[in-house]
Structure formats: C-alpha cells, structure tokens
Image (cartoon, rainbow, N blue to C red):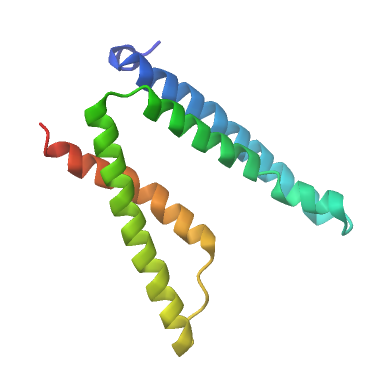
Amino acid sequence: MNKTFQRWPVATQRYVVELSCVMICYVVILISSLYLVRTMQSGWLRVLVAIAPVLPIAGLFVVIYRYYSRQDELWRRIFLEALALAAAVTTLFMVTGSFLENVGMPRLSGFWAYCLLMCLCPIFGAMIARRYR
C-alpha cells in the first residue's frame, strides 16, 4: 500500500476506497446504460436502463455523508460553509443562465448545476480551511 495513503486519517482512507468503488460502478453502469439504451426498443425497461446511472450517484451522496459524519466539529463547519457558498454560486449561475435564455442563449441542463456544485464545494472547502491553519 502507498505510504502516503497510510499517513492519511482512517476516515479519509475509507472515503477514498468507498468513493473509488462508487465511481467505478458509476462508469461501468453509465457505459452499459448508454450502450443498451441505443439497442433497446422504447418501453419501461428502456427507461429503467436509462436512469440506472442514478443509483451510483445516490451512492456517492451516501459516501459523502458517511465521510462527513466521521469528522470533527471544525471540519463539519468548514464543509457546511463550503457547501453553502457552492450552493449560492451555483444558484447565481443557474439563475443567470435562465435569464440569458430570454435573449436566445441555450437552456442550461440541471446536470450543469450538479457538476458546478460538486466542483465548487471542495474548492471553497480548501479556501475556508486556510483560515484555520
């Protein structure tokens, strides 16, 4: 096992392992789903196959929650502040996008809100954590 990985706190080690498993499942299910949807006729089974990648995404939130619940109060505060900032910026981005639709810009998918939120949260978390060093 990597020595750097062994120096991480146990909660972080578990998080990395759980996150890796969920993301591998997501990639496998996503690729399979995209392939199968193209080959299937319309119907309920096709709809279920199309939304199958949502299951590992739900698992992702379970993994994040488990990691959060293993942390101390300071880390939880940092995480919640980062999440609040990420939600605010994501909301501003999506509201701006909806106003730009009125002048002919293409409609933003909700998927972009998810991606932006998931990218901004760790960035803001790192910025906020610097305050406590």
